[in-house]
Length: 204
Image 1 (tube, helix red, strand yellow):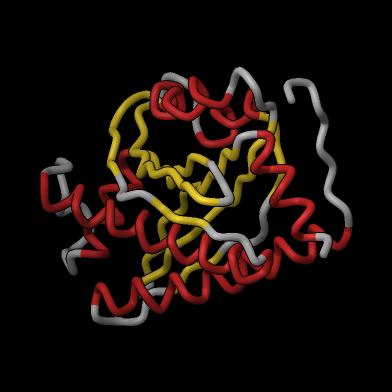
Image 2: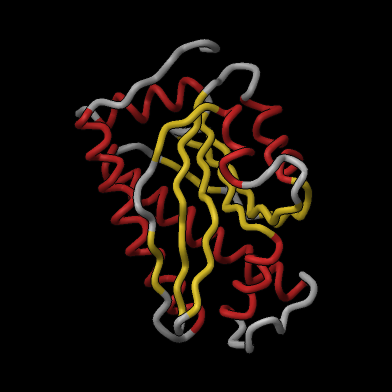
C-alpha cells in the first residue's frame, strides 16, 4: 500500500544476494553463448529503494537513456528495466557485435535486437533464480527497447504501479568482455502485493 515502508531483514538480504549471484552467473553463461566468447556479468548487490530516487540514481531525469523493458506475470506482477546511458548502450553493441570501439553510431534494428536479447537474458535468469529461491511462478514478457529521457523510460512502470507503490529493487550491473566494460542498472518494480509476496517468501 502507498506509504508502507519496507525494510529488509538479514535473512531477506542474504536470500536476495543469492538470487543476484545465481542470476548473474547464469546470465553470464547465456550472454557468453550469445556472443561466442566469455562475457562476465558483475553485480555488487541489490538494494530496496524508493521509486522517487530511481531516476537520480541512474541518470538525470532529462538525460537520454536506453531502457530494455519487460514485465512479468504469474505470482509476481512487476516491471523490469535494464537501463544504460546512450553511449554505454553503443559501447555494449560494439561488444556484442564484435566490433571495434566507437563503431556503433546509431541504434538501428540490429543494435536494438542485440540490446533486447541482453535484457531478455538478464531478466529471465534473474527471475529464474528468484523463482528457485522463493518457489514462486514467474513468467517474463518479451522485451522492448526504449530510447528516451530517463524519466520517460521509467514512466511506463511508474504510471502503472506508482499510484500504489513506493519501493523498487535496483542493482548496478556491469558487463565485461575482452577487456571492455559497460555498466548499467537493472531495476525491478513490483506492485506492493508482489513485493510483499517476494519478501515473505524470502523468509521461508
